[in-house]
Amino acid sequence: MQNSTNNEHKGVTNEDLFLNDAPLTGVFKVIGGKWKIMLIKAIAAKCPKRFGELKRETNFLSQGTLTTQLKEMERDGLIIREAFAESPPRVEYKLTDMGKTLLPVIGVLEDWYANFQNNSQL
Image (tube, rainbow, N blue to C red; front, side, top):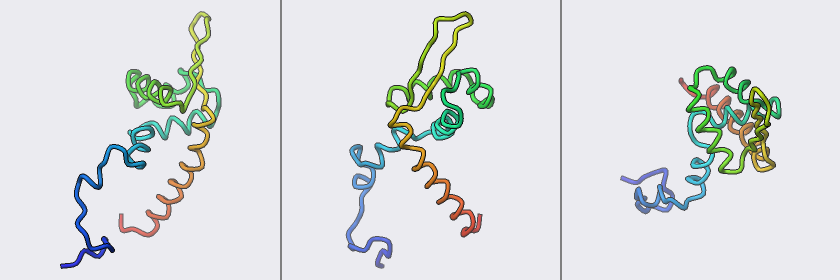
């Protein structure tokens, strides 16, 4: 039986699909997870965004999960964290130039999903 999705008619192994250096794998290492896209959009909507604002807007996330996601995004250069020496402490998050480049990509993904919903039997 011929596989209609593989035009080259050769076998595709798991090794071929899930190489650690594949570009798409790298994308999902940086923006994957349940919350990063939502956090990028929240920070973009009002930049800079204070930690307390993010916490209120994501009240379904534990503080630990929110902190972890923000640290990962900072590590990957998507956001900048700025802490102010005030009482009470104030921390703000801003998108970096690299983080801002994700906004049109997110828009394309949202458009794709809207199209998918309109054309599928969900």
